[in-house]
Length: 243
Image 1 (spheres, rainbow, N blue to C red):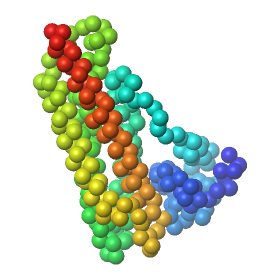
Image 2 (image 1 turned 180 degrees about the vertical axis):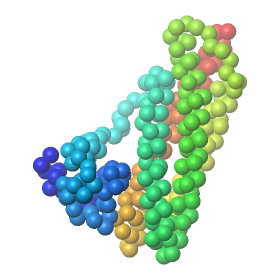
Image 3 (image 1 turned 135 degrees about the vertical axis):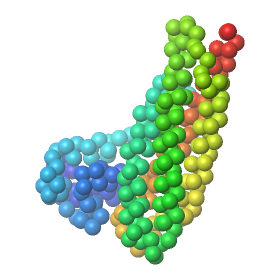
Image 4 (image 1 turned 90 degrees about the horizontal axis):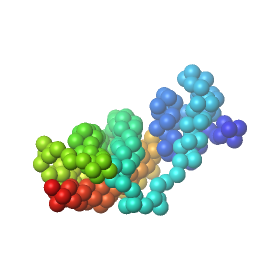
């Protein structure tokens, strides 16, 4: 902990840009006043430095899920993982990115008009993803879990109002394609998330967060399109052959 306390706010963000969202949550300016210590910043914002440092440690110690064999997971567990990991990621990061992009558009939009289009594209993405995840959490995922429960308990399941599960899956995959295309445009407009030479810390952090958001979205879509959806479709067909 003593080692962490000696690092300035700006150095934390330079080391791992994910800490920028954490500082923003506590109202701590990491951009123009990034040369302050954690103790000084926390004192001005009436934040417990031990709590903040503990959250920073958790971020720095967090590990990637690379190497996990998701294909071997039961699909109800996979649905829970997607909701608690990728859906939660979107919910947590979206307001931070919206705030940063609005700020950049106001400050740098005149010299970098592409920021205005990136901002509008991400706003559209945020709205569509919120609706998309709600449909998964309220309709598709519960039905997947019901099917798994029915197999375990050797019970029948009621015919869902949407007919075959392929109907909501087709809709979800179409929406995945739309968001993938939206982020391809964002990547192109941002020169593959490369900030300009006159970009401030917020500029750099925002582009880094957009890149991470896109990478997380790719993992999210992969788990659904390539693992969850095909297995859910097969499970429904297995039910049909048993009836």
